[in-house]
Image 1 (spheres, each protein chain N blue to C red):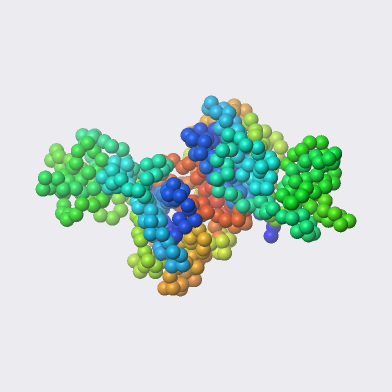
Image 2: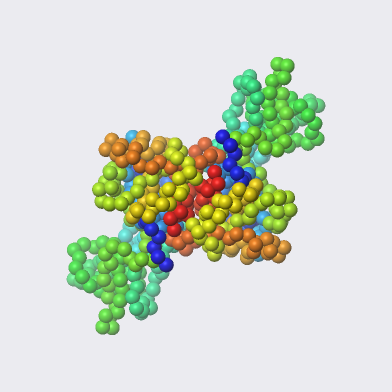
Amino acid sequence: METPFPTLSVALPDSSLIDSKSLLEKSLRVAQFARALSIFRVEKVYVYHDASSAVRPDDSKLITLLLEYLDTPQYLRKLLYPKMKLLQFAGMLPPIQSPHHKKFLRASEIRGEEARAGVLVRDRGKWVVDVGLDRTVPFVGNTETTRKANFKLSVKEGQLVANEIIGKVGDSEYWGYHVLIVRTLSEITSRLSSVKFLITTRRGKPIPLIIPSLTKSFNHTSEVVLIFGSPRNDVWEIVNEIDRDLVSSSLAINMFPLQGTNTVRLEEALLGSLAIINSIRA
Amino acid sequence: METPFPTLSVALPDSSLIDSKSLLEKSLRVAQFARALSIFRVEKVYVYHDASSAVRPDDSKLITLLLEYLDTPQYLRKLLYPKMKLLQFAGMLPPIQSPHHKKFLRASEIRGEEARAGVLVRDRGKWVVDVGLDRTVPFVGNTETTRKANFKLSVKEGQLVANEIIGKVGDSEYWGYHVLIVRTLSEITSRLSSVKFLITTRRGKPIPLIIPSLTKSFNHTSEVVLIFGSPRNDVWEIVNEIDRDLVSSSLAINMFPLQGTNTVRLEEALLGSLAIINSIRA
């Protein structure tokens, strides 16, 4: 199966939890974000700064921390996330179950090649990887720090070894999302050539009117970035001064024309908008 | 603003809560259903029987009861819903805030005509309506029982009076959904002429391939019924024998092609599917 084109990214403000009260409510909301991102194979989540609000540092930390936690295979969570107050409810959140969330296996069960997410650790003077097997696997290559990465396991001369996978893991399977913190949306463009920004807002053009032209434009785009405002304000009301031009030149879309409720919650907007974009790009 | 065409209905199985554990979890899930239905102006929710499962009576009751509760304006809830164990968490669920969820007003604030949901009650030998004002309003017409209905308030000879609105309340505003319990899906067709059933299933045709023909078919359809399976099984595995023909002749659609997660939860499928259909019909 071919990977659909273009790849999909999302930009959420660091004020995304501004109207949630308890840590439980906040955690449930981030879990809904994580599921929506994964269902639609979002590759990057940019968490950008809401310049208009006094964002609680714990809230913006919870967004990135919990998104990363939920994207991490079960077998690596204890190693990577020591007990933390912010992750108090993480264990009871609905799991994502993406292809990279693999099961514990015995090393002897690995035949041929297999990709697994893992962590580089130092063991008796050598680098090995913990990839959720009953033992660690020798690492082929150089590294200087312990860190999370993706590895290709293979059998060389009778021994199971691990090579790091740089970049994409295969073409067909979804391999989770990356969380990137950016101060401004302009930081995103500076890294990419053919990126298309779509701003979701009630004041945008109704989606039914632009589906044909939008579908066509996807042919010349390598990455679509869907930008969401905060639970309280539209994108252009919260971005940094430097992003004004970028925002005003981007296509603004009303994804929920004639909405029957006073508001659409951010987690609803995220899932619904991704469902629509997926239905015209896949 | 014209009402979009066709109207949208949804069929959910009475086993929709079969994999939810606590009453809180179940209540949160039904609240997500209610919000999705309201955002996309769904007019009817058919709760059909899952013939394959032993559905807990309390679960199927919670679905209909809580959906109706959440669609009811705040000012009528105390009157219509006495304290019930099943509604223990109803007060803390996210509100819908549809246009018919109007505020408390003083009767003297009503000028001209206004539609409000209300309840017929007997007061000193006469029928009056409670429509969330500081006093009840005399009812013009005949009735035999106390019941919920929609009323048109107007001033006649200096006095505020209420007439019942039969059928749709105006053309432009969304006025909530009706919950209908059906034993079989075939019961739905027997009431309607040009209804189109769409079955949502991972094993259906990928939505991107059928959007053009689907959009076109909406021109000849007065009601689209989106049918969902249970959290565990596809529609055709759970319907009554009598519905087999209907189900096998309906269009089956995969709304989430290339999904990046093992499963899509029912509340996610509902919101995402409605977002897609709304984006091509509005």
